[in-house]
Every structure is written in C-alpha cells, then in structure tokens.
Length: 235
Image (cartoon, rainbow, N blue to C red; front, side):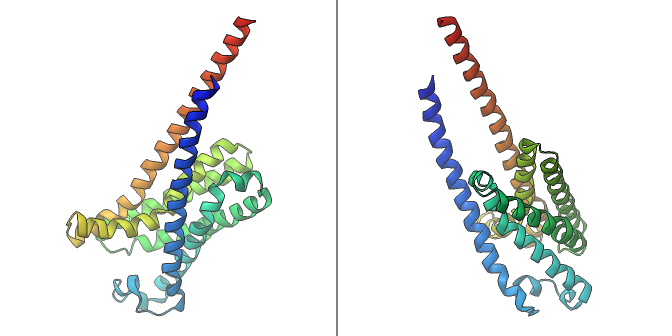
C-alpha cells in the first residue's frame, strides 16, 4: 500500500517546488523593477501614464504607501509559504507573518482602495481594483484571525488566497503585454480587463490548489483506513 503513495508524493513535491521557484522569481523581479520608484522621480513608467495625477500630493502619497506595503508583502510571501519556515523557523515565520499582515491591512490594501477610484479605464476598471483591495484585506484578515484561533489549516488556506491577491501585481504586468502583443487586444480593453483578470486568474488557481489538497488528504485518509482495516482483518 505504501509504494503507490511514494510514487505520487515525489512528483507532487517537485511540482510544488517548481511552482514556488517560478513564483519567487517573479516576486523578486517585480520587487527589483519597483525599487526605482523610490527615487521619487515623477517621470518613471507607471507615473508617466497617469497624466497629471502624480502632481496631486494626496494621490502620490497613497501611491507610495500602496507600493511600499505591497512590495513588502510580495517579498515576504514566498518564505511564509514554505513548510520549512513553519517547521524550522517558527519565530521568524511568526514575525514575518505579522509584518505581512500589517503591510496589507494598514498600508497596501487601504492605499490600493483609494487609488482604485482614480485608475485608468473608467468605472469598470475602478470597480475591479476596488474589489481586489476589499478581497485582499478580507483574506489577509481571515488568515490572521485563523492563526490567532490556532486553526492552522484554515490559516494556510487563507494565506494562499491572500498571497494570490498580493501576486496580482505580477499577473497584471504579465497580462498587459500578453494581451496586447499575443492576443492583439486594443489598449483600452487591455486596461479595463487587467483590473479583473490580474486577480481573478490567481484566485481561480489558488482555489483549485486548495480543493486539490483537500481531495488528496481525503484520498490518503481513505487509503490509511483501508490499510488499517486490512491489517485488522489479517490478524
């Protein structure tokens, strides 16, 4: 009974490691790309596309608040998702977890919610980014509450959801050139869809992963029960 299980575990283990490596790579890449914004120059990439908005002190303040919290959460997330961080570096895991939660709940999500209403693409895009900010806040809060309640299974699932929404910053930057260059969409349509696609893809992926883990645990449990039954019967 143990051999089929061992054959299944190793491919899944390496698949998880590969997915984590790709995720961590893009998180680090976006972090590196975002650093130049902290020169506070108004003529950098995204700011150039916002017209006169960067001249508004309130909007610009919220922009830097948002990217500060968002990039902090983005770079912390991959470490927090590693099982080794929970098992061997518990103190660091708890400390970084608190920083991650504070970065989103107190800084990034509120900043993103404000910026959503002034997003390019009009009201449909604004609604998409505002929804993202609300879900981001909610999933992170639920992750924190479940950890406080010591429901660590729920905590991990909510953290998966929270980081999936954090990772929307990466998906957004992959989606725009893909939709424009590969799919040939008009720029205006790309901008509107990006407000929804950037996080809905991630949400769909993470929910599928959570369901798969639940189903796999159920299969392992049934295999264990069957082996125990066979052992008892044999005796």
